[in-house]
Image 1: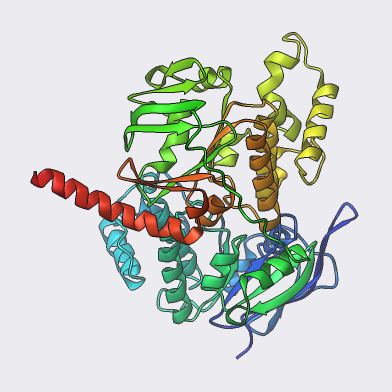
Image 2: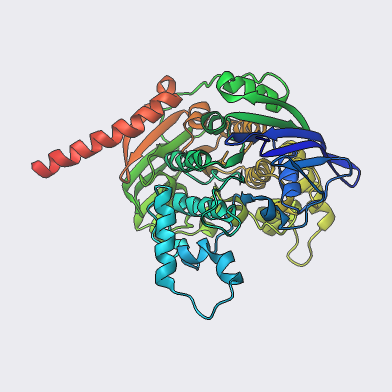
Length: 521
């Protein structure tokens, strides 16, 4: 049988700059095919050509199921050919129910006098059961766990591949465009189980990702784009992580060995004491200037709540923050007071919580210094652009034009803008949440270097992350959480990706045994 998708010599030029150059790849039937590359490598351009959002340059060819398809595709025309997309934002409507989101296209286009919601809910339940999912069709999407929202988006996309015939096998192409960055590792495994079931039914999958480990776990083959050109295609089971990294970056990446320090014998320069709120119960952490403290644990353990409670973007029930001789009441705390105390937060949700996406890079970078560096009567736009341009170059933001809107940058470059925005303040305490989420392997090293440089300049850094490899690379100490408490601590040479994973599970078992013993007493 012919391949599910064949792309030959596809190119795209923007204003004289080639974003995609004679790209070619083939996706076989029942194959999970990875698409990797650094930010700006051409992945998004290729996806948008398939979606009909961009018209390619003349000369390329597209074959679907062996038949040549006329280019450019009209927007939405991909549905005629059994192609369906799930993007990072999932495209769900949070205020609607699961069943409304699942059948939204069909219900909006069907001509009939009324809708039997009971019948539609039964139909949705049967569809979810087919994929081994237990999702409540009547639930509001806004209240679903993140993994169920992703599962719903994927099931909806697969059902759309049937072209309106529920009895038709889903044998088209499902394009998963960065579906996992906001999912904990355990939820990613659930998502991959769903993808494998879809492939067994007969579909092919294009899996677009920055995460080499995920590509190794789920794909059969993977194509790497570099600077708009296909660098090569690797068979996953015959390739190593290093093979992928070298092809993505274009050279051998030497991993700088972690050199954690043990600050345990030094007097604390700062401290979080008695912090309670959300899942957390009476949490205390000593902090030192120059130290990077990692926080992690299983989903629901509470580690990811710490940065937001300490910054005041979520309300704490109790606790205090000590910075030198100053003591601040975290129950009466907010972001403006935190920033006045030289505490900054770089959140995991860059687009919505970390920046104003529609404003320029310059506007976003200069927001923290507007009140101190510029006149309240008139902004010096020229100086703002110069300042932002200097910081963009310092943090290697690409493209380096500070007049561009923030939301036009790739995820890795957005993260570098946020680092430039807050590290220019020379903060005493830096709070990080998943700092390399959705960031490619090249930009990841830049982020690590910026964190280490800030620590070297004397900041205390708290990093909440579910990425064990990242924690092992940058942290001097890692605290493992379980049920809102610290259950284990790894220091210095004891820190490794494997030991963190082990203690996340063992720590919870020990905590449960301790609670059982306490109850028995």
